[in-house]
Structures are given as C-alpha cells and as structure tokens.
Amino acid sequence: MQARGTPLPPAPRQPWSRAARPAPPPKCLLSSRSTTLSPGWTSAWGPFCSRTLKAAWSSPFLMMPARTSPWLSLKNGKRSWKLPASSWSLAGTTLLLPGEDDVMMPQRVRLQHAAAAQHPTSIIGCQVQREPPNSTQRYTRWLNQLEPGQLLTQAFTSHGPTVPMPTWFCSRAWFSHVGPFDEGGRGVPEDLLFFYEHLRKGGGVVRVDRSLLMYRYHPAAATHAVLETTIWTLRVRFLEEQALPRWATFTIWNAGRQGRRLYRSLTAESRRKVVAFCDVDENKIQKGFYCHEESQERPKPRVPVLHFRAARPPFVICVKLDLTGGAFEDNLRSLHLREGRDFLHFS
Image (spheres, rainbow, N blue to C red):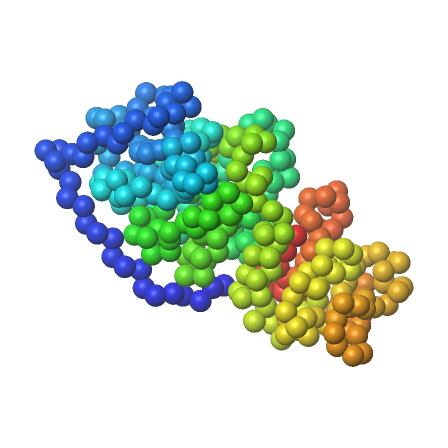
C-alpha cells in the first residue's frame, strides 16, 4: 500500500559472550508497579529488558522502551518521551515498548521475538485482554479480530494503530531507521505519528495471535490528553497522502455528519474527486444532493446523494463498525468488494 523507502541499514553487530555480558540495567524507580508473572519474567516500566531463565540479563536481545517513564523524565513541566542515551549503550538488537500500567504474559518475548526475526522491517503486535474487562469493548474486538491484511488497510480508522503501542516489538535497526518519537510532550500522539512514518517507509504490521498483554485502561492515561481534532487532521492528511492518489474518483459512504465533515476537511483537489455520497437513509437520499455551503466556488459544489447500491466504488467509508447489529457489515458484504482496492474504512 505504501511506497518503499530507502533500504534498511544493516543492524550493528553486538559482541556477545558470557565473559562480556552487559551489566543489568538500572532498576525502575517505580518498582512498586512491577508485576512478577512467573519465575524469570517480569513486567516493569523502564529501562526494561527481558530476563531469561538461564541467568540474569543473559539474553542477546535486550528489550527496552522507546520512551522513559513520565515520572522520571519531566522537562520544563512537560513529559519527555526520549529514549535515554544510556539505554542505547546496552547490548541488544530488538526493542520492546511496554506501557507503565500494562502486564505482559510469560510467553510474550519468546513469541514476538520469533515473529520479529521473520519480519525484520515490521512492527510486531499481539492480541490483548483489557483491564477492567468491560472497558472499550468495541476497540478490543477490533484489535483482536483484524485479519492480517486489515492490519494495513484499516490504518486510516479513528482507532489509531492497528496494533497498540504497548504491544510493539521490533528490530532496533528498523526503529532507528523510522524514528525517533515526536517529543512534543502532552497532547502529541507520538504512537500514531511513529506508526504513520513506519508505514510511509514501507514497514509491515504483524500480530501474534495470542493474548500476550493485559492492556489496562485508566482515565488518567496520557492518550486522553490528545485532542480529537489533532487526530482527525493527521488521519485526513494520511488518507490524502497514501490512499486517494490511487483513485481518480471515489464515493464517500455516509451522507451524515461524519461523511460531510470528511468532505469539508479534504483539500480542494481531493474534494473534486468525490463523485457522490451514499447512504441508506431515505431522507438524505430523497434530498438528492449535499451542497458545500462553505465553499468559495461559484456555483457552490453540489454532490449527489445515492443509495449505496446505486453508488459506484471505490468508497471511503465513514460508518462506524460494530454498531448496527451487523446491518452495515451485511450491506457491505453484499457488494462483493475487496478491502484496500474497492473501499477503505475511515471511521
């Protein structure tokens, strides 16, 4: 879906021997947050690495977060997400990006490291379980049930990265090739920005289909500081950059608020590609058109509103998934379209 970027630089070879084993990383100052899961495996907030059953810190793939704890990295009153230089001095070729409140299962490092070895230019994620169990149920189903191809095609949705950052596992060389994280501080969606840049450079997305992380929800999470308008603007620009250039024309599926908002948010060049809206709402269809009143053009653009069966693909779909008891999904399946080629989900 994305154009390939420059070739991946070779990963620096790390000398490794039992006689020259690196010193263990400093203990997390928030050790009360660490959770021992089974002998030899711990979950702690950084610097972090995997501990094998053979000996302390003996693994040739050292795991560390791409950002430090917000309580440990306050700069001018802002959180700093920069990976400390001291972490890069540790041996290791693979990065694990844990979350401060999340708990990983004992098999996580082994399974995701195996996947990373097979996919050196991919972000490796995993399925998750939520804590509390009933939090963000639609989002959790979406994360865990995406098909492999949808990990790329559904990157435009409002849910954000198709594998959440606390599950990320990737090559250290590839992270260096894509990175670093944006250090704008509170209110900056650094995970989404990194994910988009990863895709721009031709990176893949792979999910280990095992529940390997307890992904904890809490109302004080930093993600709640990111404004919806910030996310919306980034998503629209990414859609225009990565998807719309492939289509000479397209239809917006949803003549309601979200579909009209997308139309108004597009550049003038992209708006000219919109040949119709489509919907199932008879009131919208009977009106016959949507008039872009804010346009400076004369006459003001009028875009037809059609029944979805009368519209022609490709579609940018602004209908939320998993909200209509399956009615929308049934309508979409009845058209026998191919995701990524004939339609993309945006909501």
